[in-house]
Image (tube, rainbow, N blue to C red):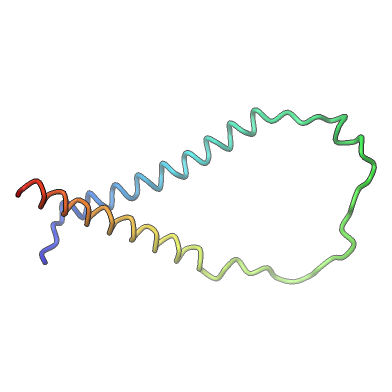
Length: 96
């Protein structure tokens, strides 16, 4: 099967655009929720029961050893593959 370079580039751009839109949407949503949140100060201090941490742990927290990056690359490649396959299928169906 011959790979169409134009469609592959289109798939990569579409996947990058989807990722940018998802991350941008999360950022905008977080900014909106942050500006709209008004805490009730009197309510937060009305309950005098505070549960504080009673133990302290020391050590290094592992950041995941690259599993998050690997998962992100995998999702990106999956989106590129799905877009490319759908694009090829639509083109074949239109030509018939």
